[in-house]
Each structure stands twice: as C-alpha cells, then as structure tokens.
Length: 587
Image 1 (cartoon, rainbow, N blue to C red):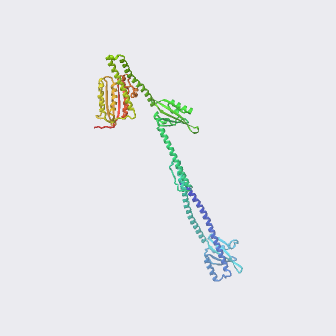
Image 2 (cartoon, one colour):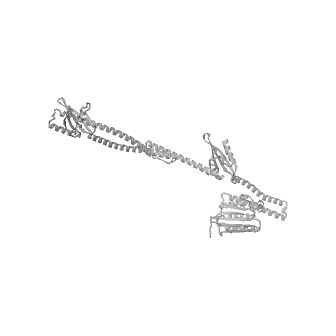
Image 3 (cartoon, helix red, strand yellow):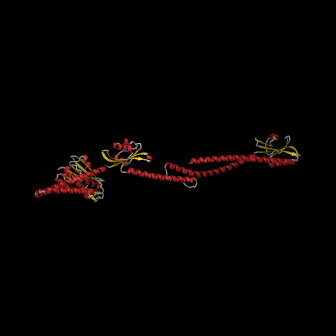
C-alpha cells in the first residue's frame, strides 16, 4: 500500500508543481508587463512635463542648464535635446554609459520612427524615449530621455524572487495539507486492504480500526463485520469437521468412502485396524483394484447398479483368521439427485458369532454334563426300587455310585456358580498383601496326597524367598489348585509336576509344568473355553467338569495378570501365570 500512497502523493505533487509553475510564469509575465508599462507611462509623462517646462526657455542661460541637470538627477535619467535635424543641442551626459556615436545613432534611429517613440538598446540594456517640444507653436526639436534597464531588471528579479518564495511556501503548505489529507483517507484504505488480503489468505482474525464516521469508516466497519462472520462460519465449519472427523475416526465400525468415479477417497482408523492395511494401498485407487475380497467388490458393484441400500453378512479372511462382518452399503445422493458416491460400513461381528456359538456349545455341554450323572442316579435308583436294595452288597455299591455322581453334579453346579459370579460386573476381590510362595506351598501340601497316589513327583521352587504381591488369597489358591490338579490328572503314573516362581523387577512368573500327555497346537486357543476337554473320556473319568481353566483365566485377569501355555504332545505342558509386582518387600 505504500506504493499506492507514493503514487498518489507523486500525482498530487506533479499537479501542484504544474499549477504553481504555470501560475508563477503567468504572474511573472503579468508583473513584468505591468512594471514595464508603468515605467513607460512614467517616462512619457516625465518627458511631456519636461517639454512643457522648456517651452519659452533660453537654452543658452546657465541657470537653465543647471535646472536640467537637477531634473536629470531627480529622474535618474539622461536628458538629451536635439533640434529638428537631429543635431545635439544639450546633453546632460550622465546615468547612461554609452559611446557618443552610438548614442547619436540611437537618437537618429528613434527620431526616424513614425509609429513609436520608444527604443530599447539590447546590448547595454538602455531605454530611450523621445517627445517633441515647441516654442511659439513651432516644433524646435525633441527631448530624449534615456536610462539604464538595470533598474527594471532588478525589479524583475525581485518579482521572480518574491513569486518563487511565495509559491514555494504555498507549495509546501499545500503539500503538507495534501499529505495530511492523503494519510487521512489512504490509511483506512490501506488498513482495509491489508485486512482484505489477510482474509483472502484465510486469517479471519484480522481486524481494522473503526475511527471514522465517513465512507472509509463504513468500509472498515463492513470489513470487520465480514471478518467476524467469516470467522464464525469457519469456526462452525471446523467444529463440524472436527466432530465428523472424530466420529468417523473413533467409531467402532470400519468405514470406506468411494466417490462417484469409483475411487476410494476416505477410510477410518477402525477399517485399517480391522484389515491391517496401509492407507496408501487403498486411498485414491479404484475400489476393484484395492479390495482383495470379491464379495466386497460385488457388493459395491450392486450398489452402483441398483442405487439402493445393501446389507449383507460376509465371512472374510483377514490374515490367517476368518472373520464375520456385517457390511452395510448405501449410495450418497446429493441435491438435485446428483450422484456423490458410496459409503460402505463394516461391523465386525466375529465376537458375536463366537458368543453365539459358545452359547450353543454351553447349552449343549451343560445339558450333556447334567444328563450323564442324572441318568446314572435315576437308573441306579430305579434298580434299587425294583428289588436290588434288599441285597446289602448291591445296595452299598449302587449307593456309592449314586453318591459319586451326586458329588460330580455338585462340583459341576458349584463351578457354574463360581464362573457366573466371577463373570458378573460387580465381582470384586478381597485384596491384601500375600506371599505367593507361601500360597503355592499350601496348595502343594493339599494336593501332595493325590500326587503320591499316582506316584507323581510334586515339587515347588522359587528364585526369591519372599514374593509379595497384592491379591485375593482364596482366589489365588483356587487358581493354582485348578492348574496343579489338572497337571496331576493329565500326567501318567511315575511322571513329574513342577511349580516354580521367577521374580524380576516388574513381574512374578509362576510356571506349572508337567510331563503329561500334552496338547496339540490347534487345540491350545480353545482350552480356556467352557467344557472344552483335550481328552474328553479321560477328563470325565477323572471327575473334571471342563470349567476349571475358564475359571482360572477369569481369576487371573481379575488380578490384572495374564496366562500363557506352551505344550508338546507326549512331552508335557507348561502353564505360566504372570502377575505384576504391586507390593514387594525384600527383607
């Protein structure tokens, strides 16, 4: 904007200078002509007055000569009197320094002029004026007044100096006023222009001053209102975009946006995490080139062709897994029925499918597990009622079996109740500081008899004498009773079960290892499911309910721990429980 102000000031200065220069030239010429005319009129009047004076005067008297010289001094001019023939009669010979011949020649030239009585001698800047004089109505000659022009030149110089000085002062005054007026009107325009440029760049916080009530003030006020409106609109738009972005990025379902040409323009974080993909492999690519699943491509093509909503359940491979998805696709139709593209939403329902299958398996397993002991109890009870109860030996044998099946049924129901209680949202642990090594030694003592019956070596070791942690004493015992009991149950006679504790700065690791039958790798992910058994016949014969490891997993997670399994068929299995060292007192 300084360039605009400079151009405006330059134009203003040019106009002022042009006007003042023209005015100065005009005034100078007028003053010069006025002064010249004034001098001419003065010379004319003085010459005529002198002509009247010398009428009837005798030129030979000495007093007349003295008076003429006195008059010459008063007029500051040289007085020359010539007769009709141009012969010199009298000359004061002062004030004008010129050669006599040249002087006479100029007088002769002046007298020969019929239309003018004035002549200018340019070489020496002299002024000559002649008037005739009379005596007794007879023209005797001419009176010639001559004076130097330097006086006129001095006056002209003074006039030009005065004009230059006056016009210079006027120029500076006008220039200052022009600068003030220019600044007064250009500064608001410059400020408004800067604000407009900032608004064009996207800076809607820019504002200008509103200090005037004229048109420039209205311009500033209008710009500020525009800036505030734009800022509010942008703020609302950014808020809506942030909300939409947060909604899209944080929604639990995967989302893909395909434009009207079939190019993928947007995908959210959930989709990237679901399918473990790199966005650069999808964004700005055609959908049939990006999607690796033919089912998804077929769904998108169906929406493009029918322009209706499509909803399907698809089983898609993701890495080494196969996951269930409920895919919902809908066309985006803008105003005036303009086709904008397609939105495809992927809901991962794998867990729901698993839960549904687990529910079905749970109902089937519970029914099966309850049916067997109830059938046995019912059968033996009917046999006893049919007459077998009169045989004491048979009665005792049947009642023993009924008691055993009742205990098994009781264990099953108790495990179901424990598992249900543990899975409830309000389940809490009775937390206290416990020594995990002492807990394991107590469990070893409880199960040592069962291990001795099978001739299994049961031992417990630790790399630290004291292993403190925060936990529920009763639930910790339940965890390791189940693990060690399973290890004894699945280890053949003469085997070995080892319990060891490893302590580091952050965790306690409890390893329960056996030399039992082992678990196949494909079955390891399912061993923590309810009623799942590696060796179903042997587990049932051992009195197991199939719920122990499910209970163990939930209790470990309730202690904010983790459990892992390593196994080899025919070699043995190792369950490792990892607890955080929340409280550890090394003494």
